[in-house]
Image (cartoon, rainbow, N blue to C red; front, side, top):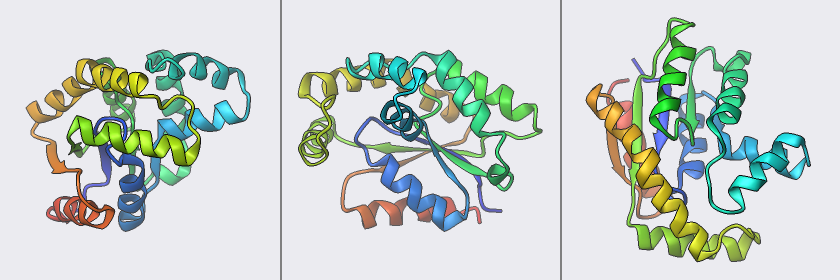
Length: 192
């Protein structure tokens, strides 16, 4: 059976967003990106967007209470019935527990956690290039390096939780977009 409730992990700039949309299309499930939800609120000038921007502009993570509420709401939508891919959530062990609770209430659980592994210096270079192309003011080298530190401190332990459960698969996130997609789909299709 194809694994349809997927958590995609990896540091900022690892290519999660690109790969999430490709995996979601392949499996015919929605990719749910907290980053996209945050950016939509920021560009929309909502109160949530202003709160989110206060944190992201200095490279900090958005508080769990805000993120958990957004994800909980998103998981009530009809399009997640056959599964979903979470990109950017859970970011810490407390959010893993919140996700477990949300899914248990529906008689579900995470079926696989895929971690994109990358070289930090390669990611910094990638994000600095993206900042120039997309005009992202928050993607300065000090902020990017801070995000990497935050990821290592808070999000990397999420991978350990899923590894303990026997659900973690690591995939090399460096290479062309197509090469990484091929690796990811090979791992996800193994249990199809």
